Length: 517
Image (cartoon, rainbow, N blue to C red; front, side):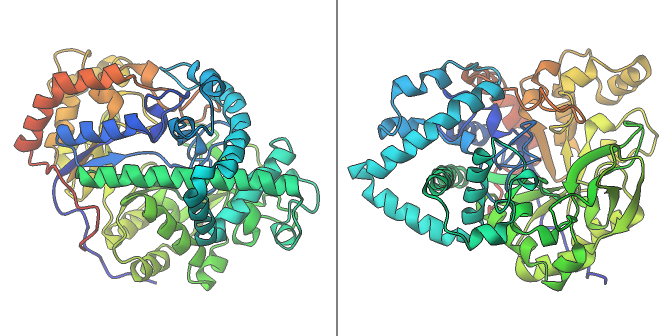
């Protein structure tokens, strides 16, 4: 099936900053949706940016990666600003003191987990008992009704994970690992109460998110979200709808996702995510996907699709394989899928993460949908003269980054370059040394790409210690945080330069949050 070529939604030149919520300052061990997030929106607006891009917002588990979430629909409770709980006396200052003692320059996920979760049942009980929270309890009941299709199974999923001491759902005892059985059961009071606490945290997360989104739009800032193409194996999605994924009747993995061996990995990458049974999705008109996208667009204005190429074809690995060396490329119904998106979500705006092994068919799928692809300046050197990431050759319908969450910071990258590559980089960008990322940021601003997105770490000229993620490493990632003083200093020192560059390179200070395509 072919798809009529669509025009791009990206019509004008804009800029944005890449920053995940976890990286923000805050009193409770991790960035949150409170004052610092609103302050960051003000910073973006004051410096001429029009977009804020972040990583997926879902609840994280082992490895702490936002790309392996317990739910494709839920928000991460860690991002709740607990100051609201303190202001309402749902938590007392002496109870949150242990959270406030956590480091402020990085996230200690182990300590956060051990400290955060025991407090949440207490906060929920006080919410239930608070005479002044009558209207909020009514709103909470409405929230549960409105989001029941995903919230009810997700809340039970999280409560049952607690019952099973964190064990993945496919290892649970009967009858708990079968959602259809659980859905028809009378749930014991203790499990129901735990599930209601998780639903309550989602209620608060969405309330606080709505306030941040309203503030962003008021300041002319468009929110760019991120959607992993695959869901986590240990997720409420797989537990609720196992027939949509490559799982057997016992919930065990038949085939998994990843990428084959390449220059960066001799054994490839085995991600552990189940693949989709695309024929089942196609028979339902991609109903699960349309609901997933609709929910995600309620949070953000634009979505970056991680591993876009898997909508054309994907690497299929045996579920028992220990590496990704042995696999096969299988076709996905990309054109049919995006036809369905166009029919159901005609104003949807996407960015295609088209990095890695890209074939002509993948390029054709992206171009036929009109989606802008990604260009990474750190990838522009050390390969060949026709490298697609050299900025002078960018097509306008693209998004340029100095680096992504998977890259080293640009300063860290510069200081690790070998002599030949360093010479090429120095000549290309006109560097006078390797002590600043700003000449490379300028090249991103000047490039033909209509959207330039810069990680905050690069704007702050930070080295490798501020790197977010090293792909293929199971721990020690997603930890970096900035301090309020760092953002204040950046704004004071660089606001004038950023505003000038936005003018010189014709990058508009406002992007409509609603598509006009």
